[in-house]
Image 1 (cartoon, rainbow, N blue to C red):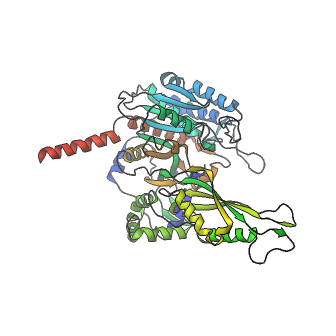
Image 2 (cartoon, helix red, strand yellow):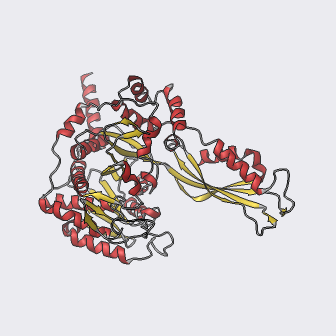
Image 3 (tube, rainbow, N blue to C red):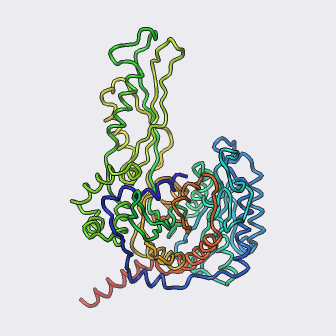
Length: 532
């Protein structure tokens, strides 16, 4: 999905603000980073890459045109299921295992304290097509299942069959070690995320809802570790590697503007601008000249404030630290929105023209109707009403000749998960404990530009949804997602298994939970009352 687009480009518009970076300093971070990362047993470290490679050999392509469950060719999905069952027999034997709509999976590992809300980790097994041929030049076939040159190659090595296997490896490892969770662990695997998740994640969420399940926390794909930090052109804006944790994702809506115009013979086109083409051109010009207004809010303000410790120039550091200040915020939002087109999506609801139709029935006939199709990606806090008002504004001069139609699909932006407090602190510490490079690591929240399956669980988790893949990306790796030569380094893959094992271990205890925080606050209030 497009969630990865712009991760590196986030820094492009910060050139005017970021100068001479220095490494961040934080006592809590240093303590977490000093903890030794988990060591995988030798047999797991040697065999795990091969298990992922084989999983990548199955072309599990979901399809919106499939007659059932978004799956046309069922054979690769069934082959993958058999491979997973053979590779992780302990997981399938010890955990409760359910199939949803034939291909999606829900595992349940009951905790010892059923009063605690479960955590949910998730992934998906479907991948996008991988065209081959001279124009694409894959180093290794996309469904070849190769481990070579220190990498595991194939479609799904980054998005996101990789986390499916890492999570299963982590569950298997914890079972092998005799770990017993206090909090129930749910592991959900969708099969049609690339088509919107209607038969996978959406159906699993509906099943959990029917059982009255409320989730403490959700972990899905999303941000990654940018090992090169952030660059602005040739300038190194932030040198430290940055772990981007998605705390929200943008919404999605598509609208049609139906345009009416004067018809007639093409030999006598109207001279008063009343043709469909002329009206369509004026509307397109208005859309281009007047994009939706900038709005700098969470989690982008959280992102900027998180970057502040890595900025050496004192004035810039002060500006970023006060990104949500009522005086600084609107000006900073406009600066960032104008400084780079790549950053605009993080400070405004975007409007993209994705279709224009104004053709007639013949070369000598002027059309009487046309359609402009626009796709909107909504910021958190903005909705259909805002989009309608914007469309009314850009079409106001043609209002008598246009009809606005909202297409059926509408996904609101996700609630913004906390970037402080117990859940964030737990996740940040696990990232630092297991993934921190020698050069240090800055962990910051950010806004995912695309959509993930996690949106189906927002309501069940009260918005406590985090989106992060434990993988290190260079600037060149971003283009591999949905592109050519998708791959992951073997060392990176193994580190990710350790990350999920540590995360599951800590998150499934009652440490850092919302319930414990609430109980502590209540106890504090009680003690204060007793001393009055």
